Length: 217
Image (tube, rainbow, N blue to C red; front, side, top):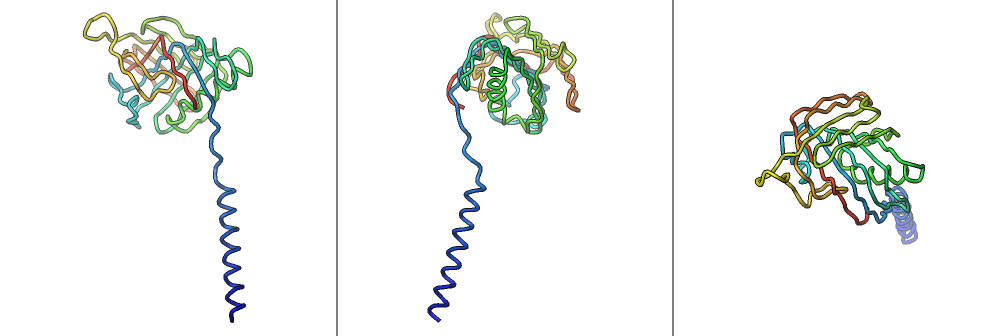
């Protein structure tokens, strides 16, 4: 009887050890984080009324929009990011599509990886594409085109604050590449790619021509 009990206990112990090993083997590996620095012009337009709450971390699932950044300086995964551009389209909480314009494969890989991490909370990543991205304008009056406007195009203007000279501003937002944002208005926007299409007008814009941040992600 005693030997039977020992055998049963031993069998249970082996089973538990095997289960633990399987659970451990199936557990996702911790994400590798990298130091980053980034600076440039950031612009985002969505279908919300002015002062979209998504930048506070309060995700609005009906919010959809486009945006991007023209990078003047930065480092990530050992690559120099200067001169690169990226753009995105999203329906928050649903999907996100990324577009990258880089000078070489190393920069392309780094900008793609950075954008994937920075905007992973926007929704499920559907696709990353190489595309020609153009930023023109300054001080809140911007035009952004992806693929000559065939995929994405939007124009913006600033919304001035109480002094009637400078735009309203928000600090410490959840936008990784530009925690400080200025308020603007979408004059017009259109997007069509990957089975998604929408237009925007007279809606919310956030921008910062001196966007910058650094840390680890």
